[in-house]
Length: 68
Image (cartoon, rainbow, N blue to C red):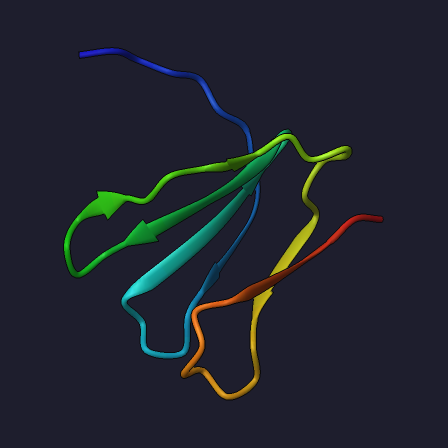
């Protein structure tokens, strides 16, 4: 087991409550709460992730990130 230190900068639940997106200082992590798994991380952001949101219809698992 490895312990990895990550600073969370924001978090947002999908409207269905089964997906959690978390922003970090260098990427985005998508947590599948139903399966209890962390999906592949989206890394390589040019700036700290400050805000996350899902599409307005909630049916699409796409997300939007904001850099300010």
